[in-house]
Amino acid sequence: MSATVQAPSQSTAAVVEKGSSLWSDAFVRLRTNKLAMLGGILVTLILIACFIVTPILSANGLDANAQDLSNQFAKPSAANLLGTDQLGRDMLMRVLEGGQISLLVAILATVLTVTIGITYGGIAGYVGGKVEATMMRIVDGLLAMPFLIIVILFRELIAVRTDKLAEWLVANWNMSSDFVLRFSNLTPLVLAIAAFGWLTMGRIVRTAAASLRRQEFVEAARSLGLPHRRILFRHILPNMLGPVIIYATLTIPSFILYEATLSFIGLGIEPPNSSWGILIKEGANFLETYPTILAIPAILFSLTLFAFNFLGDGLRDALDPKSSKD
Amino acid sequence: MLKTILSRLIQTIVVVFLLVTFTFFAVRAIPGNPFVSDKATSPEEQAALEAYYGLDQPLPIQYGRYWGNILLQGDFGDSLSMKGRKVSDMIAQSFPVSVLLGLSSLVFGMLIGIPLGIIAALNHNRSLDYLAMIVAMAGICVVAFVLGPLFQINFAKPLQWLNVAGWSRPSDIILPAITLSFGVAAYLARLTRGGMLDVLSQDYIRTARAKGVPSLQIIRKHALRPALMPAVTYLGPAFAAIITGSFVVENIFLIPGMGQHFVTGITSKDYNLVLALVLFYGILMGIANLLSDLALIFMDPKLRNA
Image 1 (tube, rainbow over the protein chains, first blue to last red):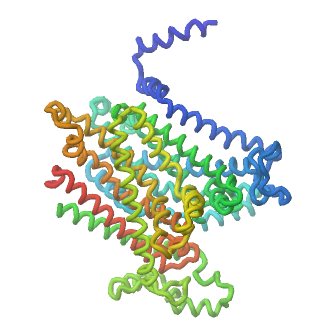
Image 2: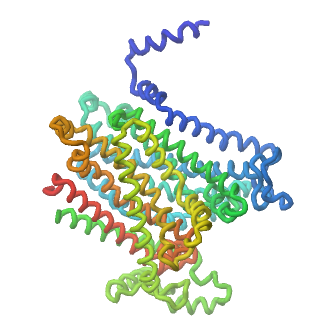
Image 3: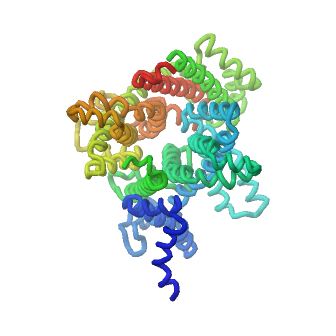
């Protein structure tokens, strides 16, 4: 009852009394951007499909790896909504499970990227002076290296350790080998991408932190005698969330792309584990005879990149109106 | 200007040195050696091979020798996976192929991307702008390993004069170069559009308009140069993107370039080949970054005195 009465007045009251915050302003702007909203909806749908629907389906006996050699290259039917592949595996389950891995790699690597970037860039920007100069010189140097090449080398280097760890876990901790193997395949890729993928994030955070440090309200906080930790967490960090969120949203699609590229050339996720990169690589073999085997993962993959990029662009325009050039 | 060149030069030397050092110890830390995978070799033969290539020596000695051979004799060693071939020969053969492919895709990318960005900016917030930006986004999202096979099927197959894959005729460069250029074109279009919009809102453009300078001349004489700055800054990263793309495109179109060598070098643990390629890629990146710096200085007089 009261909710229906309050709802309209609350929104207008909020605007009048509290003023509109950066975030509510941004949300209003984001809502008017149709492409960004479409991207947001698609991202949500894809995430739900891969991380909620897929586990439910596989808990109910649908298996992405169950082969049925009598049912190869089947056309879409009630049993296999998107048909089957060269080994009679259900395409829908394969593409969903592949997406799970691809998205997991990208999201985990992005989380690491944000963590490292905020810590490194935050320290550099807040401390300033020679420390900042040295720290950013290191970032410049790392950025001048060919990204994918060091990622490939680094992944090879960690892959051995994680494989050993996986064997040990299976042997000593009685963990399901299926589960462990999947993660031992994914972990080195995530670590390698994140280890060199945080550089731009570090730069962005440094710029934000350095400009915030010189603002009056931070100076005021300092002259009030607040400890550094409190200034950092209460004043600096919340104020640079905008650029961090924007860049993180745009980082996810680029990491999805790196995963797929590496898997495609055989230096990323390895079969029998699947990812979109693996599915596209396999599908390319049947391009002439059964184009849907390539088309299904390729379309879903491209659609995901579209969705994340449009959402990220929209967020940038919404949170940072100056940069939108409208 | 001299300062820019010098600091890039120093950065490149440091970066290449660290890159090679990291790679040197990284590839050797990956278990297994290049000869284990050969089923025909017995342990004794393996030991003999290792001794022949100096892999039985302690790591610091191997490392010192590696640099010594390069700097004093210009010798990158023998390939460990392709017996009897020198790494320098392999690079001498694949380098021109990759450079030709990379440069032509960069040119394609600029020819498509920059005009697209300008058109979008001039029609800001109109349908042509949206169309151009959606096309650009498609260039980013529909990646090389999807585009490549599509091109093979739709162009190479019906058009008899194009090979589906391979590197034997001059026309073989067309499809891979176009495939590789899409991503670059897309980024360039977005950057050019952004730069152009920035410039067009400046006061001096408004002044020119007020004075009655024709539109085309404003674009050509006043707006174009500063508008292209973001795109020029992207030259360095674009080069890295082309290296990345070449791994995929050379694989799809079976092109005997450095990208193919790098991927097989990693899987077959061909230490010498991988190291030499990393060294080369590092130097090429340095050159690309330097060219980008110089182009910026050339285009922006304000940077010249800095």
